[in-house]
Structure formats: C-alpha cells, structure tokens
Amino acid sequence: QVQVMESGGGSVQAGGSLRLSCAASGVPYCSYVMTWYRQAPGKEREFVSGIGSDGRTSYADSVKGRFAASQDNAKSTLYLQMNSLKPEDTAMYYCKTRPYGGFCDYRGMDYWGKGTLVTISS
Image 1 (tube, rainbow, N blue to C red):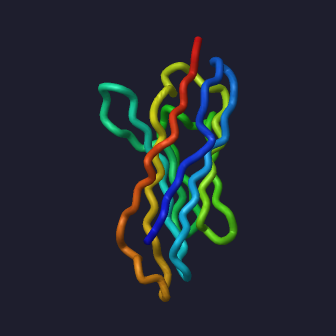
Image 2: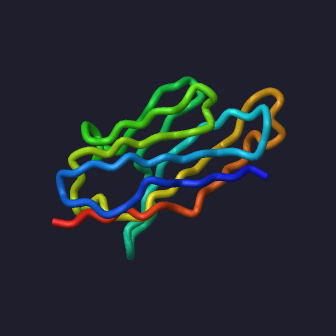
C-alpha cells in the first residue's frame, strides 16, 4: 500500500541543474525516512543523499557541495536539488523510504520507487 514515486529527471548539459522529488503516499499516519540512491549502467547502486527522522541530511562525498536534500513538513516528500551537474552524475536515481510513527502500520519496512533517469551531457 505504500507508494513511492520519483520524478524530475531529464537531460541537461554539464553545469546545469535539476530538482528531483520523491513522494511517498497511500498510507495514513506514516512519516518516512527517505534516501536517494543512484545506479549507472554496469555499476553498483550507490548512496547519494538522505534525511533521517531527526531531520539531519547526509551526502556521498561525490555530491557534497553540489546536491542538497530537503523534506516537506509532513515528511512524505524528499527533494534533491542538484547543481553543477557532471557527466558522471548520469544514472537512474532511486528513492528508498522507510515508514515510521507510532500509528504507522508499515514502519520498519523499506519501499523503493522505480527510479527517474538523469542524463548529463558534456
């Protein structure tokens, strides 16, 4: 019943910007710990950025200073502002959500979206 959907991907030239969104919905009384991952062709899926239940954000070294994550007040939507994009940022970007909350029936389980494609050209 937990639905996760990423959006905002596209094609942009190096140096440009994109803003990704990840929305979790379909279940009442749940907040979400949300994390961005990405996977390039032929490579392992890797951590990009995330925000915990305490509101603190974290970033992979490769995106620090260029990407910024944020979450709405309901903690059901995660954003990733991506600036100064590089060709090596090209990947499918995935959102992982973990519901939590005292009245949340789906807490403790991970849910993944199907991804949004980001392509950066030189």
